[in-house]
Amino acid sequence: MPYYNPISSPHFQGGSSHSRWGATPRESSTGASHHELEGPANLNSSSESYDTCGSLEVVSVNHLPLEILAEIFLFCSDTLKRRYEFDRPADPRRWRAPMLLCQVCRHWREVAISLPLLWCSLSGTGSFTPNPAFIKLWLARSRGLPLSLSLEAPVGYENTPKYHAHASKMFDLFSNEMHRWRTMSFTLNDNLARQFIATVDSKAQILEELELVLDRASSASEEVSALLPSFPKLHKLSWWGNLSAASLCNIPFHRLTHVYMASCNSAQDVIACLSQCTMALELHWHRVDCWDPPPVCGLPQTTLHLQSLYLKGTGDFAHILSRLTLPSLKYLRLETQSKAQKHKLLEDFLHRSSCPLQQFILDDIYVDQESIVKYLTIPFLETIPDIQVYLGETAKDDVFQEMQELKDSQDTPTFRRLQISYPEGGPAFTWK
Image (cartoon, rainbow, N blue to C red; front, side, top):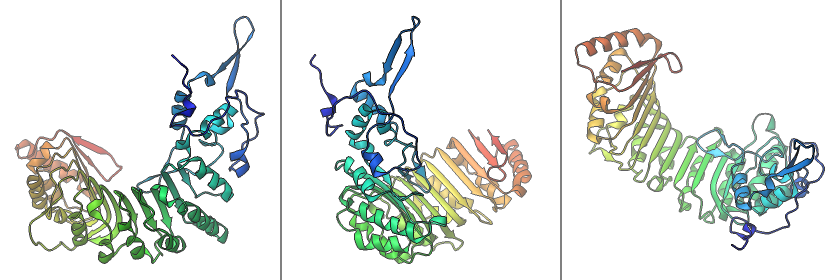
């Protein structure tokens, strides 16, 4: 079979000689400069050992086929940081891939540089200020492939003019590649929000995933939200910042498959948005205010594809469920603070939806004993493999006593697994 050089394959762009030996190791530093990104390799990838006869034997991973070495490199990417809903790229450092791979030996450096996928993720945030040429060269090595980028406004000790200027410059560099944006995560203060509003336009044609975290003091939420319909391929949105009912209308819920909202809104606003989520598979909404039950009008709205629903806030979320039909729902989590729960509304929702629930989590440290016992006697619950209930400390003994009495009288469902904790993070009792 003729030899095939994989460095000419689509995984690689640009070729080079296969030098095996590196330069003298250098001391590591906390950052990475443009010179370091361009500079020669500085460590040796070969290891030396002696056989039983005392002769020197050289063992090198460079004997691996380039395709295998490339796959190994792709798995070396540094663990991403999750601060909100999206995994965010780590900031570039010498001790992290892909920079670290370029320091092992010249051969590894040549392979790493020839692999554009290694250079498609980048954070412009960090406790250092890299030379803009460094960022430009990093982006150039991705050779036109879609990008995953992250940028956060300076906070804490970094809240100085120097770091604000750095963040603004990073945004300018990222916006030059707007046509390649695929996954973007921004934490915006007023300055960056204004740049976002002034810069972002219809060029972001392939943007699929967007996370926007707006500073609490920012007044640009409405203007930023108005730009969302201009991203035709956007299907995954994480939004952290309060929006008015009018601003919620800007969000193209009908196109989104994954929705993560952290916005203080009424139950009526949330129901109106949920009814538009015709393509949604997963929806989380934090800061829901359900103290005032929504008005009952018309038939419940059906969302056919929704599989995971997580509501967090205050009040009885059964009122929200009473306005919905979710036939595909598999995971339901209600995390709230309420004085009572309308178990009949939940029971009607479960029967109406007839959904294949695999897990139901109720977290309510203020709910009264009567409400929770009625919840746990809903017959539909025995079809759910995993039920977890988190209650306040004062409810523990009474709930168990009444549950035992109901079980003895055979008036309670037969649970496959029911876990009750007092409070969340405290001792868990499993009821089977």
